[in-house]
Image (cartoon, helix red, strand yellow):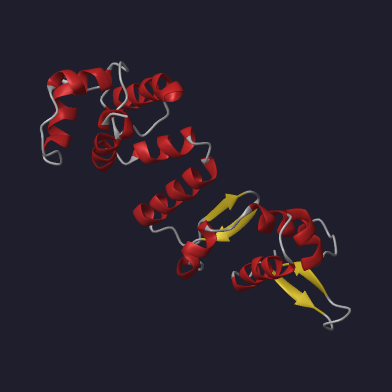
Length: 198
């Protein structure tokens, strides 16, 4: 396989769609400006070791081709909105919402912004120290939390069965939710149960 094919960020079958989305994004960013292609080239020229030709930038702008990995990262540095586009194209709109909300918090210094991921609400400012843990929440944990919010009395055994994992993994998942302040255990060890903290 040639190095050009190995350096591609997107699968071949998705490249046309991605190229069109990137072109739409670049056009939107420069819709009221003249010489958009020159402006795009100038904004990434400093970052690239080898200066991309006018033709390459024009191909991106017109949706004829998709940038390779290095070029996409360089474009994303100049146009951070491409990160959100990339997350949405990868069907990770949950992370796109999280990133855009975090950027909004940084820009506006909002007191207590809320963001929703799979119906799990996080207070970004109070959870800043747990940022990495929030991003690592898995589907088993979300399912467990949702069941608790609906009033179900379920345990690690139920989570292990649902997620097809061992009981120790299920307990670690629950412990992470407890550390994030999303669930707590109520009652005696033998007869107690978990509840969702809302």
